[in-house]
Amino acid sequence: MAEYPTVYVATDEPRQYSTTIQVIAVIVAIVTGGYMLPWTIAIFRGLRNSTAIFWIDLLLGWTLIGWVVALVMSLRRIVR
Image 1 (cartoon, rainbow, N blue to C red):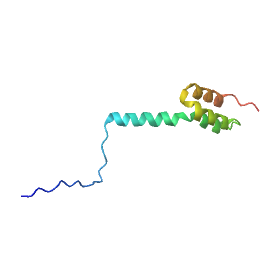
Image 2: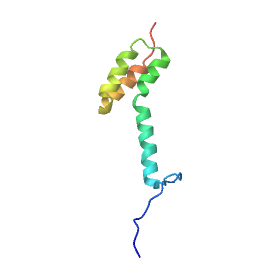
Image 3: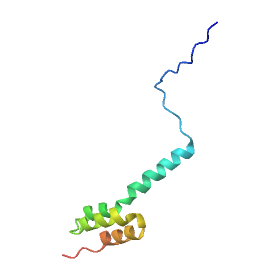
Image 4: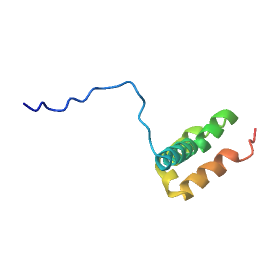
């Protein structure tokens, strides 16, 4: 008898990921969502320096010090 090659059929079943991968995915989603939080706060508070906060957060936020600086800038009291 001749042997035929194995045929793999695509299914519509969702792929099952391990719990560890799922937890890592949730952590990454939370961290990336919080990265631009200072800029979001500045926008909702209507701060004039929201553009500066955006650039500080985007370019220096990864240092954590830059992120804290941007957060402090966005939480400062509005002086009119």
